[in-house]
Structures are given as structure tokens and as C-alpha cells.
Image (cartoon, rainbow, N blue to C red; front, side):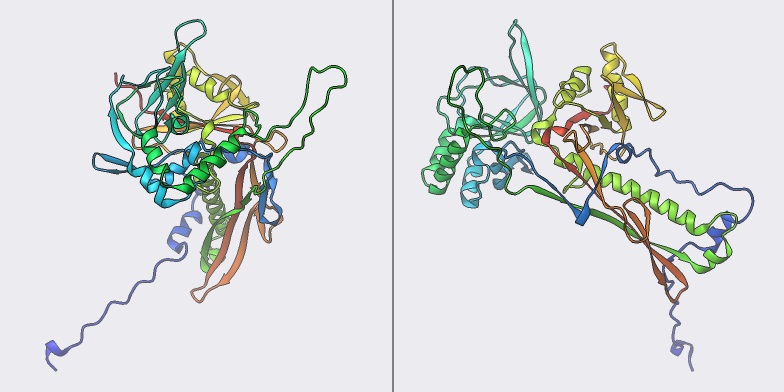
Length: 471
């Protein structure tokens, strides 16, 4: 047989490691040692501060008084080079178009939106001037100012990416700007004029029917929170006729289903049998796995699009800092939007930015005792660190403020206890058996969610500058 005819031997594929190796296990079986350490573990203040409510049946329904929501959401855009266009379906976030779903009409309206770039310091709209278009902010920051009662200008609001103003102009020919809108940064906005809106309306009977229904809803009695009004009389004398009323409820209340975070922990039987002194290898493996699971749980409670605090904060409860760096005035603005604020949550770097903003005003956050630990606070409300709140590439982040508890109509955590093989409240560790490689498997599961009982229970200050100003 020639050398060329000898078949090549194929290397035996190496199976991926499924469990802790004996070499690593021996690190806990010799010499004086510490328990396994883990840098991922944080203080997890959110999990500690949330009141946890039992969600029997795996879901929790939030019943509310009927609210007339006429649209107050944010608009999203698509950027193609220097050109920006609005996503047609996002126009349904405008008050006059909330709930309108005719894609063809919305596309026609989106096609008539004109792009306008503005520079820092430019006056975009003047108070008292006629308003003949809705303005959609694709990028940048603008401030709305008005005349104060005692003279001087006062800042009414700060608007940023996705916000809009002037929507009333589409249906009210006599609309005027109630504030002066000034650009704080350079940016881009899209405008849809009343004339272009009317041109599309003339050939869209469904849109006309929608506007008629919108005007009808707007005439319904409602309080400042948008809830259906409860009619009553006060200050009358004699036998005046009293109004009759009832409290209407939402017909389709929101239900929160418990989410799950799971993993399969694998431990070789040889490790479990031979290397358990003086530390229990199985217990240490499980402890660190549970720590990682709880860290992911807090991340989901902050960021999950279905129930996370950041994505689910009401748009009316979102504010912008006046100058980028959080100031005492910004913190007061966030605090005053709800009664009984229990805590602030912010990334540690954002808390450092709060300190810089306060120092610039000659102030420094006070400290309060929380479970034996001294933490910074503002107006007696603790400012707690949470590294799960993201920091953007532009070095901006968010500060969360919340009221908590069912009795306070605040934010609550949801879980179900009494699970089979429960290891901690709402977390179970279930034995799955031993495979042919003598590896033991455990299914580790955590069930949880969060619910915002009233919109004003949760507020967010967005686009907070984290990086220090250049010197």
C-alpha cells in the first residue's frame, strides 16, 4: 500500500463542556479559601424596595376609572442620510389621529410632512402667532417658554426627540401658539400644515368620520387627569336639582402576566460526590446562579418592553432636564408630578452627575438612613443606584421616580409563591435528572413582573447628561 493511499484519520470532535470540571472544583477542596466571589452582584435596590404582590393564576389585572385618552404619545422617524421621514403609522400618536388605522391615508399624510432643520437659539414658533401646522421633532431639543405673571420668561416644558407640538392647528383654524418655542440645540423637525391635512381630508371620508368622533369625545366631561368626570354640585342652596352620576370603568383593563427567567444548572456527579468539603459545590453553584438570575430579573423590570419601568412610563410623566445636567429644579419638577414619591432610581454615574449639578448651584444632596445604610436623597426621597438603567452612546441616561404599593396606587412587583421546589419566594429549583454523561441537571426558574397602578405613579427624567462638561 502506498503512502498516498493511507486514509487520513479524522480528529475526534470534542464535546462542549456541560458542567464544572474537576480541576476547577479542586480549587474549593484544598487550602484555606473563600466562597466563590462574583462581581456581577449589585445592591439590587429595586428588588428590595418594590412591594411584592401575589399574582395568583399567573396574571394581575389593573382596573382603572375610565380615561379619555386622546393621544399623547411619541412619534418615530426613519433617517436616510440627511433626509428624515416620519413612519406613517406613528402619526396615530397625535391627539387628532389617535386610533386611526387607515394605512393609505396615514401614508399620504406622512408624504406631505416637510423637513426643516433648525439651529441652536433659533425661534421655531412665537407666542401668540397663528399656528397653522403640527411640528414633529425628529432630533434635537427645544424649550417652550411663556410670559410670567410678574414679568420675565418662565420655562413651561422642554421637548426632545419624538415629541410634537401644535397638533390643535390641524382642526382649529383659529389656533395660536400659547408658548414661544426656542431651539436649545441644532436639530430637525417635520411639519404637516393645516392646508396639506385638509387636502388629504377632502378625499378621505374615513378620516372625516374619525375627526367627528374625536370632537365628540373631546366634548365629554373629564377631569385634568383625563378620567371620566363624576358630576356633582357644590355651593347650592335650597332645593336645587342635583346631578346624577356614576363612576365608569375601563372596559378593557390591562393585565400583567408573570414573566420568567430560566436556566439549566449542570453539575457532574463526581464533583457533587467527591469535592464537597468543606464547601458544598452544588450549593455554591446554585447560589451564584440565583444571584445572576436576580440580576437579570432587575434588568427586565427596568428595560423589558412589555412591563419594564422605562418603556412603560406614561408619556405625560416624562420630562427633560433644562440644561442636560440634572439640577435641583429638574429634580423638583420630577418630584412634584406625583404624591408620595418613595424613591429615585438612577445609574451610579447619573447620581454622580446629580452631585455635579447640585454643586453648580451651591447645594449638595442630603443623606437619609435606609435600612442602616446612608444614601443620598433630595427632599427626603432617597436616590438609589441601579446600574440596569442604560447609558446611551451620547452619554445620557434617565432618572426614575416612583410611588410604590397597592394602597398608594403606585408601582408594585408581581410574583407567585408556593411554587413546586421553591428555593426563594418566586424562584424554584427543580431536579431534572442525570444524563448518560453522569451530569446532574437542575431547572432554575424565577417568575416575576411589575405593574403601574396609575400613570402618575411612575415618572422619568430622560436625556440626563452623564458625562461632565469639558473644562
